[in-house]
Structure formats: structure tokens, C-alpha cells
Length: 149
Image: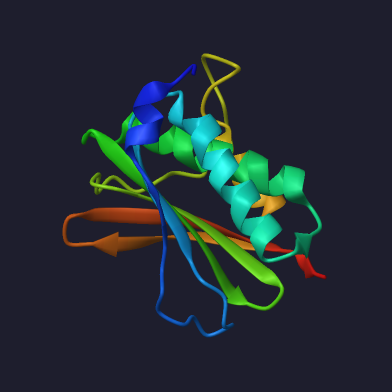
């Protein structure tokens, strides 16, 4: 197994009925670059369980960008991915961490050409995105339109 430490953190499926009647999926992941792949697996699992078709690759990219941002900028040892279905055709991907630093959508880039473009990608692939602040941190999320079978 390539990342045995990821097996120590189980996925959570909420038992509480959601407004759409579908469960919410979440997983706490170590704040490590390897967790990005595990986050994508959780999103694929949720989409398959919900029989969602559509821009699955877009969902994978948004997940990668949100988790990568949190892995790079959060200060605690873990991040939490939440995959929710607020409406029958909408998927919300959220990443929670203990940082209170707001994400910045940059429009001008200088320096490293491979860095600082994550939120531009999220903005272009989602219907909408945003940040929810908590007393102890924040959640950055993006919503994608997905067809249900």
C-alpha cells in the first residue's frame, strides 16, 4: 500500500437525512500532499453512490485545488473534506481547516507560473464558490451542476 497512513482515517457518512434525502460524505485527512488523491477517491465514491453523471473530471479538479490550497496554507495537522448534495442536481465540495486566512482569487500573476491559480480554476469550473468562517477556522467550498441518473 502506497499511503498506509491514509487508512487510519475512516470516511464518514452522515446518518442524518439531508434535504435531498442523500447522505453527506466527509473524511478527515492528514495535511499532506498525498491526501489530495484520497480526497478525489472520496468524491468519486460519493458521485457513484448518488448515481451522478456529468463533469466528474471537473469535480476531481476542484477537489484537488481546494485540498491542495488547504494542505499548503492551513496550520493544523489535518483537513476535512465534505461532499454534500444541497439539491438534486448540485454537488458541494468543501474543505475545512483551522486557518482563518481568507482565500484570494488572483487576477494578476507574478513569480512562479505554476502557483497561485487554484481559485481561478475553481471559479471557472464551479457554478459558485465561497468561504464560510467559523470561530476556529473556515470552509472553502465550490458547487458543481451534476446530472442525476
